[in-house]
Image (cartoon, rainbow, N blue to C red):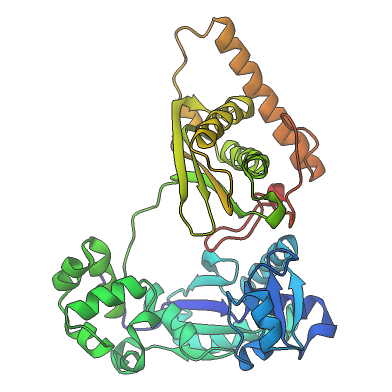
Length: 414
């Protein structure tokens, strides 16, 4: 455990990224309230709001009908994930002309590690990062930059005075600047954790700061509480390397797809995309899970287990069996569908089957080979040319290629 004496981390956090990206790409939208939606529908919610929209009280998650009522001049734009990913890659290249990117935390957040020779000039480097983004990308796409002794404090600094600011949290100034923050302003403290802290008499940052690390570990119920304490107090926190646990996709279904048949058609597309991602990453799965939810967020869950499998026909057959179970449970009206391939095994760890000479095993190997061929063809032509069984485009597109909080799609996903 080490406690840095200076600023060792630089965190870049873009302001209203999707909405600002659209204003950057479409100059006619600049200065206007913009809301980004996942699909062109009156029954969806905003996934991003421009600064102008936020100034009028619009928030992420607001339903389209309410947003139109609240802001009659609102311009709605359907998300273009491939454009945002391309912009993200240009941003990374621009930042790395100034300082090395240590980790890409999300589509609009990057963590940079400052070399010992750079730490004395941390503030100047922060300003230079903002300048290079403005000159090489454009002034519309602004970012907030935070500097701190570790990852957590640099991220907190970046979020403290958004938008378009540069903030440093020096280790010798702690806890001063932190005391004005709400507990939920701290990454890792969600409403549930804040309620747990409140139950223990911890209602503000001053009370949290006075805790001992073992106390916070006990309140959290895991080592994450102690890691949070160390991060807030300026210590470096080395986390164990995370292991891939699953490949999955989900989709809120369009209104005319909210039947068992519509959910099944969507699930086939989502499973094919997830299986292709899994193969590219070098894994097979020993389980497939299916969730169906209704408008009350209740629903049905089922899963099937099998020997390590990665070919599309076998996985689609498993999905078909799960839907037959859902049909028996009378799951006829579905608002969303989610699939996940889990219990992963690296392909190189799969042992050769002693009975691999059987006709069934040979057929499975052919299906694996053909699945790999389909992946290569689809990736080369950037579209789904080869697939197993019927293929229906889900309204809104981007099946398997939507940007998630901690996942940026590969080019092959589009």
